[in-house]
Length: 300
Image 1 (cartoon, rainbow, N blue to C red):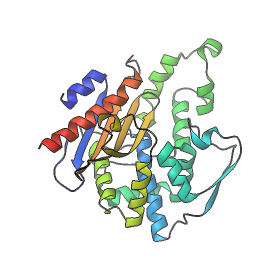
Image 2 (image 1 turned 30 degrees about the vertical axis):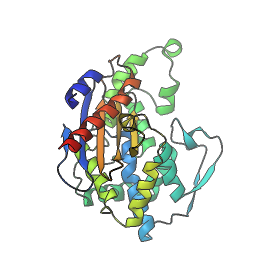
Image 3 (image 1 turned 45 degrees about the horizontal axis):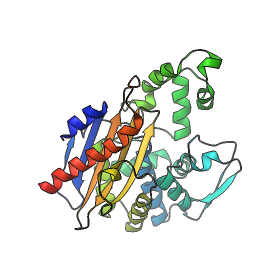
């Protein structure tokens, strides 16, 4: 099925691109359109930090304290813990890429700095890709735009108890915030994300040790039901997923076949907040889109 039809069947706006790791033309749909990457942006955070560790400007064994009273919200990892945590910079990278830990991400953004992260992608020719804020700032700004004091206040809001806005009204408001507007918030394109992955896999994104570390961590991501769902068990997938507020649901990664051929793939989806489409159905849909693109490249 054509990629456009797959996106239509999912009732989402989609942007996707795939290209061979070893060079050559790629295939895609709306691959130059701006997209909200959500946690897919953690790839460039990891690359920047690992490049710094490799060149000596960042100490990978430096222990960072993550205070319990200043936690970036998140569904997994350190966000759920009640006590202070100490962890090395290099272990924070592992936490960020394997389970998408938000606290680890914000600490690493603090270590590297947003300017340095954005210079990393700019140096690789990614002119449409930018990380606009750390995650805690982004979430609080979203909540404020939606009419709440901060993110924890929004999460605690119960319309039956607190009155308006309704859950549906909150979702609609969130969809118009800067964080979910790729013209104003963190952004990328499917084409540039694939370009980043190709550079990492070809050791062209900085010191070889840094790219190797990023590849290893992406291969250990626990999420296996998006791109990986489109391929058999004989195909290895190293990827980073991302999602935000039920509006965007994404994944980008590299699929490698037993014949030695490997392909970088990025699939970004955006769902209307008023849609009743089952979010769980989008995950295998991402796999189907990735498979369709890779099959086209392999047949060519």
